[in-house]
Image (cartoon, rainbow, N blue to C red; front, side, top):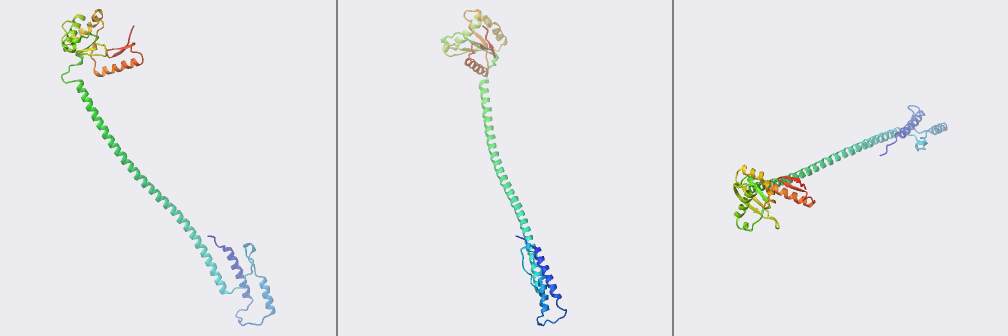
Length: 298
């Protein structure tokens, strides 16, 4: 709201005060108020006084003569002036108050919006944490179940590999390329006799005590391998491995090989390695001696 120009009001008030004082000086104190005949000299004085009336500065937008005013008019004008001043001050205070209220309202709205957002975000985060916690509990339960299943499978596998009455692998041998006899399919004693003949005629050890001998047939025309378990006598096995080089000097057993029995894991590993060597074309260049993979020498 535009403010009232107090300078203009003050200028008008000054002019009116000056005019009133001039008018009061023309009468004698205590003179009667009865109407008298007009006096030419008095008219001339009034005319000259009227000429002395000031005009409001044209620069302020006013170009009018201020008429004479009595005390009641001056009082009324002063009251109007005070009222205008009070209205101006009131409007100024109202403007300041409205500006202050707007600022406070903006701050309150921002604070409330921020608080509402924080509350909403916190609620969503808490809900998300609960969901994640629930998923983690389900996942942990599944992991525990898988772990228990795996442990059970491993125990079962170990039990299958090492039955209660099984002997140690150090008492077992593997014989390769020993000729196959069809009678072995019906009578396992034939296999034991062939192994006994190998030890006696090929190695020169006639008194090897054989507990069991079982042939595992190979693919196609292969005679496979024979798994032999001897008596728990380390000296017997030592003599067998010390004399096995003599086999290459005999016509009957020159292609027969005697090796240690290997655990199932080692045999699977060697089988996988042989398959890999075959894929890369290196199966004729490398072979296993026991657990070692070595280059073949020509």
